[in-house]
Amino acid sequence: MKFDRFLTTNPKTVAYLWIFFIFVSLGIFSFLTKMSYFKIDALSIWFFSCIILFYQSQKPVTRLSSGWQKIVIFLGIFLCIFSFLNIPLGLGNPPYSIGDFSILLAGLGLIVMGVFGIRSYVLAVAFPAIAVLGFQIYELFLVNEQILSAPLLPVTIFFGSNLIRLLGIPASIQYNLISYVSLTDEPVNLLITPECTGIWSLGTFTIMALLVLFSFPEALKKRDTYILLVIGYIGTYVGNILRIGAIAMSGYLYGPTGAIENTHLHFGWIFFLCWMTVFWYYFFTRILGMTFWKGKGAAKDGK
Image (tube, rainbow, N blue to C red; front, side):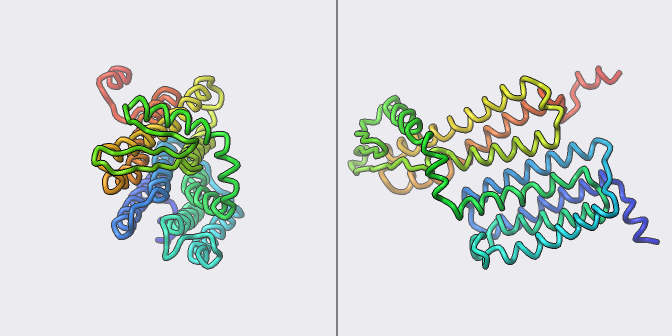
């Protein structure tokens, strides 16, 4: 009897508790593990998943049939087990990465939504695992990175080298090798590789866009959606060019060690998070008409 009452818990409460659980779990995991670019990508996708789940909780939910409940619960259990088999299978990163942990959390989320029979939340909680598995499978075929980034590499070299010249750095540029002497009289050599094209950031942005479009299909009917998505891709790519400029400038000012390493590690994800915050805030408020807080204007409209 008590369990039946438990199953009738308000879907909004289920969503709020799940979001709280995700923030606590990822916070503890992040505190105990080292920072990496892949971790930032995963955390960004989880944060985005929670935003989508929050807004879905404000609307009437659709329910799973009894048959689909069993399927969703089974998939959740499978993901939980798979998260520990991921590394032995050669997909995960030892000892236990944010990707493997994301698969575990997504599996738990599917079990929860399956038990409560909430169909509306299934995609939002499962999408981080789909994204992680996609990235991990992609890593097995890194030759594809050369294929995907090949058109971007010459463009990245062109804009990156011109930005370096605009910054006043007296660099010698031979295709993808940038050489110059820093103000500390030390030689600096920067190599623009396929990883420098921003292919991972563009992939993360694509995953976020797919999650939004699947969750809010009404956005597909608006022309401004496609214009904004193009702007989103351009902004994401521009951030990568700025990253190259920042790395070059830090090397020019402080030499080939220390500052240049920190800039290489941190500038990209800091810019990416800032850009994603601004872009998706504008998208949600202007395209989807969402409001994040009630101001005076909202109060007047409600009268």
